Image 1 (cartoon, rainbow, N blue to C red):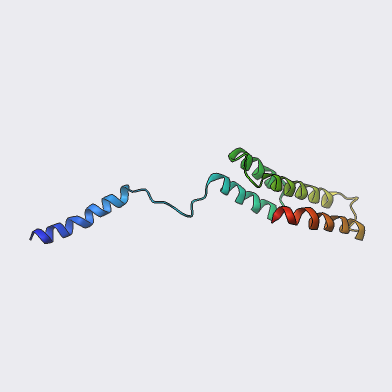
Image 2: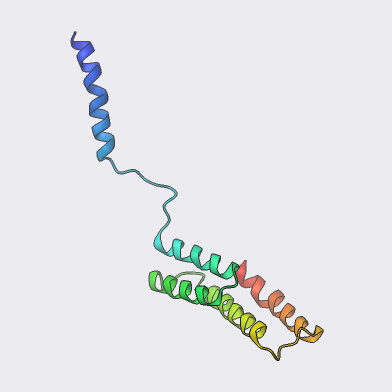
Length: 113
């Protein structure tokens, strides 16, 4: 009988132990990683306001973040792009498009990679 009773109490003890143990969550990102992810989503959406806000939150979370310079450049590009698109005088002429394409190729793509 002793074996049967110890068999029933053992799972209860394990359940209590499991409830009190802290589990390492390999999918839990740090705050700077979360902020950088939010910024990437805003940049990919070409949302200049959300991009600047997400950049400020990332800076507040980690002022030494390795990607800050590139993220700032990408935010500047998004703001400039949106300003150009909002400007009634901006013409999608081949020369203007070539300038934007050169900027993307030479500065934005390297910053994003």
